[in-house]
Amino acid sequence: MESQTSATLLLVDDNTDLLNMLTLALKTLGNYAIERATDGVSGLEQAVNIRPDCIIIDILMPGLDGYQLVRALRGDPETADIPLVILTAVAQDKGQFSGFAAGVDQYLTKPASPHSLIAAIQQAMALNQEERERRLRALAESGMESTGEAE
Amino acid sequence: MRMTGPAMSVLVVDSDTSSQQRLIACLRGRYHVLTAASIKEALEIVAQAPPRTLIVEVDQPDGDGVQLIERLRSDPATRSMILICVTTRRAVRDKVRGFQAGADDYIIKPVNPDTFAIRLALLERLRRLTS
Image (tube, rainbow over all chains, first blue to last red; front, top):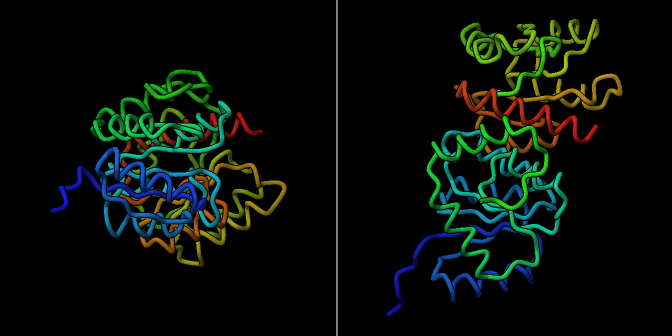
């Protein structure tokens, strides 16, 4: 009998090879149920329809980019509290600031090990809405455009 | 929160008075707030002096707020403005249309006053970084 999954993740990335690799790693190591989307628009549709426990989002995608997808989710009370992790090749400080300013909980740069991704997912899922708002406020008050990796 | 200075102007384009007042309450004290109840009125204000930020409801008595965003984004005189949809339209296709027209953010009413002010402050910082 199949064991019960720990949570449902939605992976949004236009690289299907990476999606296959992440799906295998996250199912095996984290016992997660995985849903997938290959662009920002279908990622948003799936997020609204299935309400995953966490969404892992690439930045450079057709349709809606990752920042826009994060903003679309955070700007709607119905999806604002879904834990969000960006996993991207965009490593510049400006990219990280853009991600955190949009409302993402964790920001990882590729290549990231499956274990570091699972750690980021768990940290994102541990946040409540109050903490999320506190972090956003702290970012606005920090006066720093470079945030570094999330706590 | 770090202040953005009294010179920062925000134009709220919404024909619904209570929505307009809610947004003004979020912005008062931090921004010079202007209001318009239609696209025509908004374009008149923008033509006189483009505000730093424009917040627009998609449904307007004389047209479509997303088309206003598209128009401002394609005009060199206004393309660097911060443009935000604050609307009751929450369908995925509406959100996608808003972002693809050039909206910096798309927020569903009613706005949370605390988070709205923070999101706007962060958008201003992002715009300074990229300009």
